[in-house]
Length: 129
Image: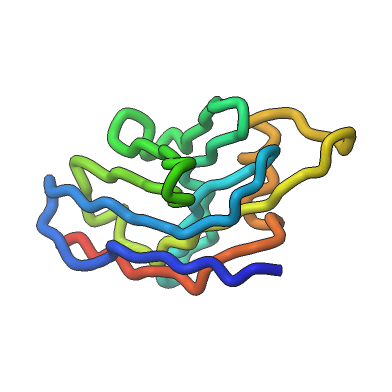
């Protein structure tokens, strides 16, 4: 397992923006994404990206958040706009690679598996006030 490292969290006023970053392994066939956990709430999948470039978002962030990956830099991003207090949480990145020939079904499948991906970070706090 690989310990991923997130950065970019912080405090922002409602309506503001933040961009989270996560250094990820160079898998060629993968699920990568972000989930979050707010105090007293269940974990929530936020967004995933699959190796075919497809993405899936939670309804609560669709249209406001954008997930992307820079293959050259090996970095996963989460661009967050129009933030509100409900977005306050610890954000975790997660990633897993899949060998050729193993089961793999794209971003919707990845989204269901987000909490079970083999590698994750320690989280970065996002606070919106």
